[in-house]
Length: 250
Image (cartoon, rainbow, N blue to C red; front, side):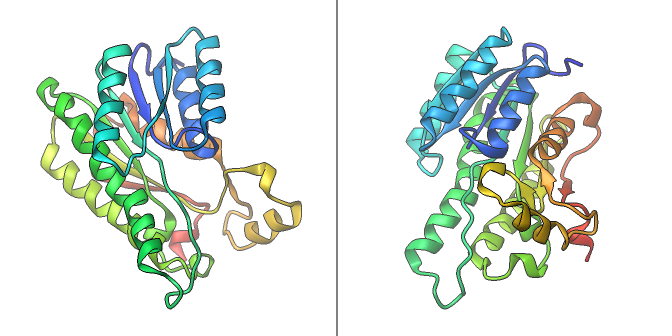
């Protein structure tokens, strides 16, 4: 199935984990992909190399998505070398679990800038070319922690606030940009995003808290992102799709 043949996709935070999975899966469906990273250079370059092996074009682009100049340069390079961006996936994020009295101003700003400001900057810069063409799709990756106060998200106030902000920003963008541009959100729950960092005991313990009986996978998050980005979802905008095994219904 090649739903994205010759479309250009920019994925932020794609040097590893869920972002890398998303980038590779778009390429498997025919897309040319810009793989953004901040620190995971090796992972981003390996992901881009795998995409080229599929006979797709790929760029590994270092950019601090919290910084306007970096974002603008990233978008400009993507469009010069790959073509106009058809799909933007804002995935870059940091997670912290710190009690409310221990959160410093510096940590709060880092989380909000990485998780929320970056989405604003990337959307705004990409929209400068999407809007004149009156076409394009944005899928922002939020979190079940931005929807629910489920105990698994305890002591993550900054993270939860940032991801709730991503949801509302996306909703307002969807309303403002319709019908030309669709904007939706995928909200992962407890995901096995870096399997090498988990023990079987830890995976089982977290999975036991999920109604579906297990943690989710990177592939399941990627599938939801691609669905919302595809023409299969052409009548869907302004929506949040949880990929969490039922956690947010509790």
